[in-house]
Image (cartoon, rainbow, N blue to C red; front, side):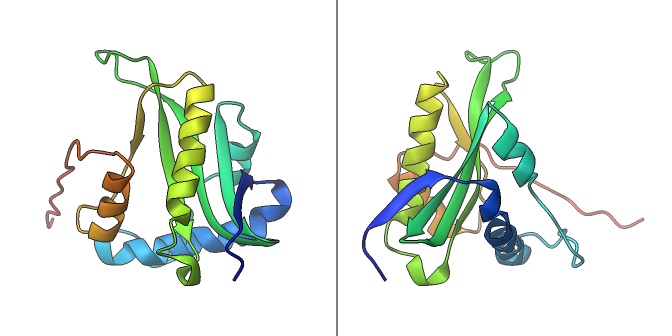
Length: 156
């Protein structure tokens, strides 16, 4: 494993690997969310994100091997907030053999740079409340807990 990790924008030829990462994200999130269907699930429109001038998909590479991913997308803010739009981050995935090496932080830093270039002053992301390692990683990067989403499953 080369210690020289570089961050770059994803390209269409990366899609097969990124679609595999997407399925790994789904698998990792199922224990945190019992409402995720067991059948084939797709979270992201990666083609659309790559084509969107107000979005970016970043990958971390160890030489030619893609080892991590993340995206940033400009989204409209609620009308009562002090900003009209914000950067939403998602698709955070790191190959298990590369975890604990700060690569996700490199992706987040790259997405923060993108948000700054886009003039976006607010950055948000979602993380499951029970995913303590991810929460610690994001807090280490300066993120603060903001709101908890609650759910109730009723029987009919």
